[in-house]
Image (cartoon, rainbow, N blue to C red; front, side, top):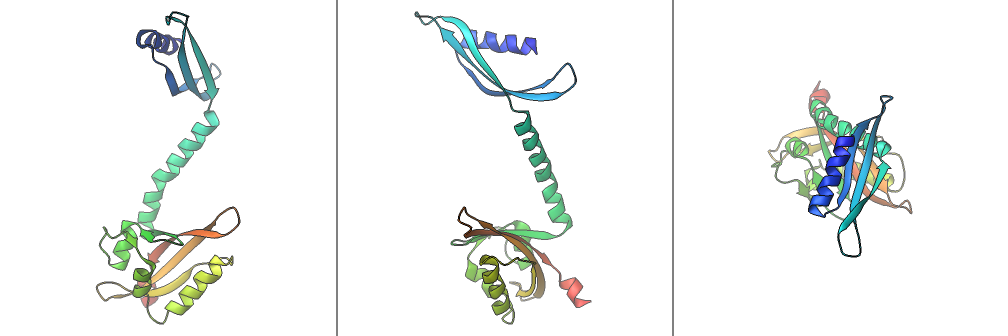
Length: 193
């Protein structure tokens, strides 16, 4: 640790440049892992010569642990989605639907067509399911719990498929719905048995 600090200080003296927002991982003498965010700036005398270094070290261990935990979850998510054969979507209520490649495959759309209009999705719904699904969406946006829904779609290749959907509404500070995020799964095999 001392060698690292000394090397940083020598770099500041040689380059006359600050070292900012450097996160250092340390193990204390008691074996505890800590992360420190280091900032160092050269101090200059009245002639502009470096006469010292001013440094701060802030303990960012909790933040770093949270970042690592989030990274671990992000590493697991693609595996879970793939194993569950799930497609992910999000809908900014005033804007477009955004689908991942897996959801495009479920609906028979090119994987490059990941931004869709509401009308494009609605056109693929089976006519007998449109009113029920849209009514559920409206009650969900109004604040009712969303326990999921099953509906039929017509894929672009003309094949009829059953979809199971789960979602949650994200709300702003005034509790107004601003976005829905969800998953869809093709359950046609289960429905046909």
